[in-house]
Length: 89
View: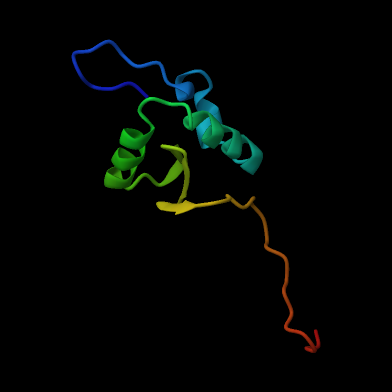
């Protein structure tokens, strides 16, 4: 991410490996979140993402899935079946 001012662009971690910020694997996304912690524009990035209603990716140290901030992104595929205790299949 670069800022849109007349100042020199800010070096941000997401410019080094941009695919990591839109990865499918949760461990890659968690690594991206960690790198955001040191970013000088983290707060501005998060606020802008919320304002734009970003649908996915790591923005400002938070994971977005379907426009919602989540702690962990779950993988693709069918979720496990959860049966209530004592029920029959």
